[in-house]
Length: 347
Ligand SMILES: *Cc1c(COP(=O)(O)O)cnc(C)c1O
Image (cartoon, rainbow, N blue to C red; front, side, top):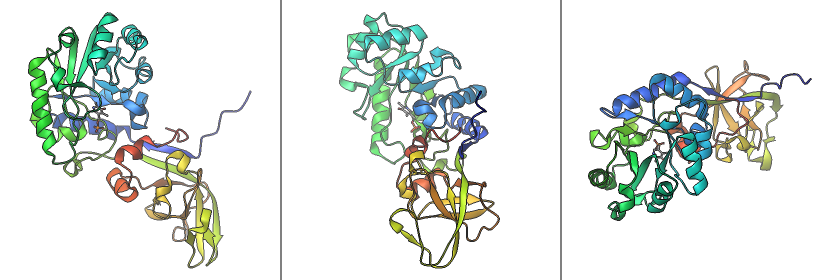
């Protein structure tokens, strides 16, 4: 028999208490509405199963995924009736699957509504397009007879620019109110993370935070509420000395001005630590800042250990990854910074 597989040299340091605290803060900020949770894309890359189980502990009861496979992944953890599948039933097979597991499809069009009813229907959610022009029933179709035959739990819409002071916010809010008056439903929902901060008019009965649960700060005024959840960490595999005038990494983009001590860290762009961090990213250990030297490789990144003699081979270093700061530094969005974190990180 093989010995147990050794631990990989890279891991996500995940603060599940911060996830709980973030949900509780967003639930409070949602006023009379209750906060749900977007756990699509594997919980924004951090692990949907663990995120869902953790959020259940603090009272979250509504979970949003994009795909049916993402619902399937949660069936043994959460009451299937509390899962909403945002992409809805695209085929008869989706309908049959949704009915068998008891998760709610989000109906996004008249054809999805008809398909769901043809399959026998059942409790569903209904997405109204108030301005995104992506998924959802357009406002000029909300009077359609087929929608009146649906058994709608959550009537939802999705904000285009909640993180900005955009005139679209008020416009979408008024269209959503119009849809609420026109269609029978149990609960109404509009706000994503940033939308929660827009105030009570946007809250309805249920809010749907995603990014801020996981430490994202879409509006500066949310910074004091939200705690960082994830720190990517990796091990230093080798330490070496580089003479003045020598270069580091592919294409020799970094040249040492003086003798340096450098460390090779076991993470690279294949893990989502993208090339944009080349000669720019910072790792941290024992309070020291360790700049990235040269280009990030597929599986490796070289960092400066010249002023950190206490750090060496086998030590773990953490990428500086506070999401607003990392987004500003990298040009990636806070959403991308989370969802690109690769499968090789132990979670
Ligand atoms: C992803 C998503 C959310 C969560 O949005 P955040 O900006 O991450 O808070 C909410 N609602 C819908 C329909 C979504 O697709």
